Each structure stands twice: as structure tokens, then as C-alpha cells.
Image 1 (cartoon, rainbow, N blue to C red):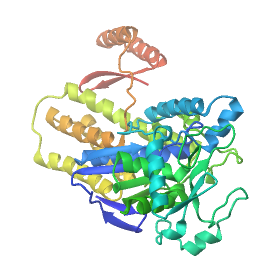
Image 2: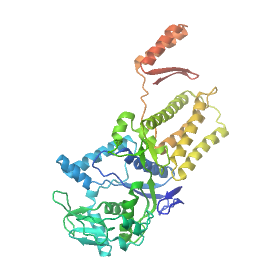
Image 3: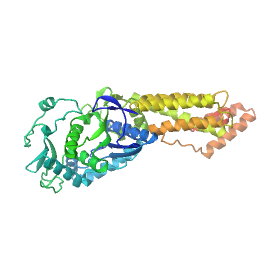
Image 4: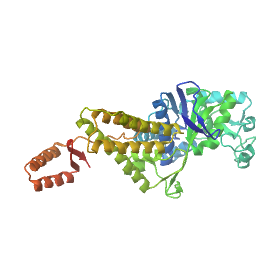
Length: 464
């Protein structure tokens, strides 16, 4: 498998540190509100990365944190007159609901910042002792100029980064680029005891400490949104490599932005949508499909027309699955020509080739729909394929959908007895050549939300 590495800006063959194992760290949500559709992209994309690596035989350890102490959390808590922990606990639960709705598997480990203070403080102490950080009035800052490779992820020279840096009036930094590792507590804020007094960690140090503790000093893949490249991931590299003395991550993967109606999503523009809001109207699965129908590094667009197209695409897949399962029940044993088997295996290889090419889910979905077209021909043509052939096609179809995490919403297949009775009455009318009555019964069944089809395998009933 080849991965585009943001660090080198090259497509590189994935070679894990330990053969057969993959250690991945993904930046998780800051839990002060419902996640928006932009947040859904890395969640879905890197869930597929994990699924695909496991599909190819890797043992994956996937760590995704919850940032459960932060300025935004504290602000929301103050606005509502509750504790910061109440806010974070509430929105961790809401995140889990949305993640489940999107069919995102739980991480191997979901560490929380508030439960990781010992390891965070230990890393800050190491940085101070190594001459890479300093304390001023209870604040601790990282000395950027002690890390000569600063800017290697964002590919910006240090002087360019410095030009945009500013020192806030309340800060006492030696260099505008220096960033906070530990913040002295302000009145009314949650705090933890430390060698530098009461306070809480800076944003960047949290991920470095948790990645080290739950994975290793050097991990295989670090992933997140494009917006995190600078300063978050750049700062993670600096503090991790200075603190540990080894490279932090071998591969860096970043997904592209999401626009809404071809404009940047913004509350001020009135085009800001949470996952929950979109799901209530269109369902969760079309959102997941939207995130995968384009290459993860590309910019994608969201609007009503596009999400409805995603709904329609999923319906085609569900119909194929339903028809295939019905045909499998009715099919007889028979010959499974080798050329037909090889054609199905070729489609599977097409899917794998796409995924091996920097997780190209767009081309992988194209392979899935080409397979869908072939299965539809197989199950509705003039000659029904043998049971062995349909079963093999179904296995390939299910594999692809499983890797992509699609078709997880089970359709209601149980047909009410009232509908079955009407279908039986219609069959009797047809047998008696009372076609007017048969047509009337069919219309009645249709009005009740079901479709009756006469196929070579018999009468098929399905929900509209």
C-alpha cells in the first residue's frame, strides 16, 4: 500500500515499524458541542484506513483522543453555569451517538486529557530538563529555536512562520513562536497540581503524551484534518522529537476541507451544519458515503443536491444486495464457469488496487458499482446464474462494502401478514384470470408501501 506522506510530500510504500502491525494516532474531537460535517470527514476516512489495513492482515492499534479540557469547554461551562466536566461528558456521549450513526468503529483506546495528566506533566518535565522549555510565572513554553527542523511538516521556513507570530499582552514568551506546554490556572478554571503550580496543559502537548503512552515514542501513522498541519501537528513533532530523541511519526496523512455550496463553512455565513442536523433529515449513511466518494486529500462540497445523490447511490447498492439475496435463495446448484470467477476476482483486485493507491476510495467505489452492475445482470438476466456463482459474487460485494463501512443500515425485510394475504389473494385472481381484480390488489399493495414483482424465481415482495 502506498500513502501520500505530508512530511515528505511523496507517495511512499507503507512499511510499518513492526511487520504486520500498524500503530495509528488520530486527533479526536474537542468535546464542547456537536460535531459538524467537516469533523465527520477525518472520522470516516481514517475509520476506512483502519478497516482496510485490517482487511489486508495488519493488527491495528488505533488511538483517538478526547480533548476534554479546553478554553472552548470552559467558556461553554461558564455560559451554562455548570462544570467543565459536565460539558465534556455530555458531548463525549453525543459524539459517540454520531460516530455510531456514521458506522465508525470505536478506537482501540479513547484516552481523555483529564485522565492523562501524569504522562503530560512527565513529558513537560523532560522538555524543561533537556533545555527545550522554560517556566514563567506558572506558564511553561516550548523553545522553538531548540528544534532546528521546526516547519518540516508544514514546509514553511522558520522565518516565515515567525513573521506571522505575535506575543499576546499577557504572555511572557522569549520568542513569539514559543508555544504553551502548561498554562497557569486562572480564577474559576479547572486545574491540576504540577511542579509549576496549579494549571492545565496546552493543546499540543496532550497528543504527544498520549501517543507516546498508548502507542510508542515512534508511531506508524499520524492522521487528522488538513487544518491541523500547522500549528498543532508541527508542534507535536517538535515537542515529541525533542522530548523522546527519536522521530515521532513515520507517515502523516491529512484529509482535505469540506465546503458548503462551494463556500467555506462558517457560522457567520449561515452555512454551518452539524452531523446531527444533516442526519435527522437525510440519515447518517449518506453522510458517510459523501466523505468516501472523493479522494480523501481532495476538497469536497456539500449541499442538498449532493447528499440526495449519495442517498440514491446507496439505494442502488441496497437494491443490488436485496436482489442478490433473493436470487441466492431461489438459485439452483450448477456450473460456475472459471472465466466468470476470474471476472469477479478482477473486480476485487480493481478495488484493492484503488485502496492500495493512497486510500483512493473514489476509485474503490467505482469498482463496487461496476461489480453491482454485473451482479444485477447475473441475477436478472434471461439465464439465472448458479447458486455458487451468486454466493461468490455476494462474498466479494460484502467484502468491499465492509471495508468501506457501507450498507450497515438494515432494511426492514419482514413483510406484514396483511400484505402476504393480499399477495396470495392476487395470485388466486391471476390464476382465475381475473386480471382486473389482480391489478386492483396490486394497486392496493403499492398504496400500502410494498411492491409486487413477478420474476423467473417467483413472486417477489419488497418495501418501497
